[in-house]
Length: 81
Image (cartoon, rainbow, N blue to C red; front, side, top):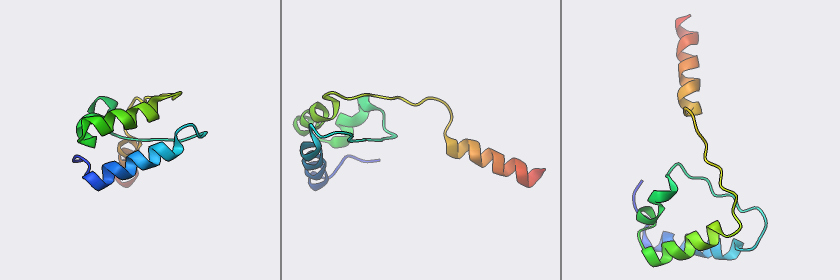
């Protein structure tokens, strides 16, 4: 998890721009939204990307333990039992 390189920032902007106004663009991230500016690495471009992402968006924030962690515990219990 490091800031995007300039080419990757531009690619993300182009994708978001192309999909702006189109139905059903799904963006999934393990990174909390308040850390996106630092991750994108360019505040001006981050503003433009966030504007396109959040326009008419439905935001779902998942809670609870990671399924990977839960499934890992189940696998360990199977091996022990």
